[in-house]
Length: 438
Image 1: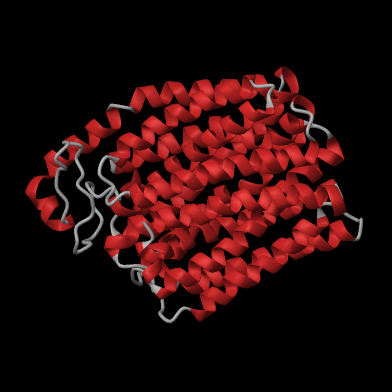
Image 2: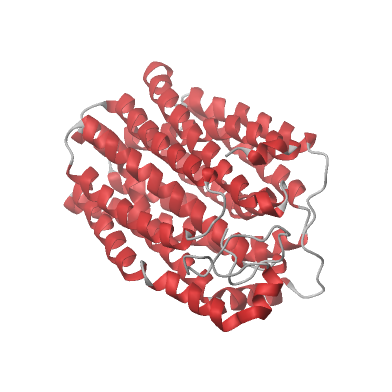
């Protein structure tokens, strides 16, 4: 389960990320509560989420080209340093009592611009921290720390906000970035880009977009991710309403709900890490999307804290299995020279669809209420999961057959005994192809 940890660079990354992400979850929880405290309006909750991720629309395509051109570790050092600066500014404003709503909008937009470059660079770099045969495990373990920190961060934030206010959480997040910056500096190899190119950035954007759109399994995976991000994930920005107005538990309740989501997410990530290969992962991704939609319906109708916590645990599991699964599939399906751009599209789908969903959810919740808004999102996830539960595996199987021996020789991947079109990455870890899905 933990075989990627035998590699020093990944151990450094693992430790630094866990500390940093715990701080990030603290900040996210405190920020949502601060917006709610200042406005008591779900529309503003949705709008702050929208503003915080829309910069991906402006910078995402160029970010993918940059990731394919530059040394990845250096880029991540820059983005993480800027994220530290953003958290520090939030902390100073909040602790001095001068924080205003427009500050939150501006700093959320700044964070979104940073993430447009940080997400694809960090995701591709993870694949370079370990040999190709351990990539699936490394991505799953990365999801473990992302979501394990969700257990600690929101729970601690709920207590700290109740005792000393939101500013202390922002300050803790700023300090936490020192851990990941130290880990990046301590790594002993360079994570070079796929290669240099004489083509213009606009030409490389067009070629990356053409490659992605022409690759049907990649296209379907990104579409399903967009549906979950647009219709399913906005339940997170409505959490303060559920915690305060529906469950009547205040900021402590918000921390408990987010912590329960982290428990489920960690369980899902550990389950993925236990898998020896990614055989059948495309089927799992779609089925988990269906379970996620059903859990949204349960959560939307719950007025009991234990039932809501149980539903949140299932939702957390669903998020990590679907997103980590799609991440794994995309990294192995894509060719090395296009991987940075494909992962930039992965980040763009999330960072465009999710804020748009946040904005729509906030607006809709103002009219029909948060429970009905979440229930509607769950219905969308159920419908599209049912549509693709057999379709995606069939597309991958047909693509495998159409490519035949030539593709198998290129990728080192063949049909699995179950006939799902994938048998896991080859021991040699050849270049990405249609068939590779782990």
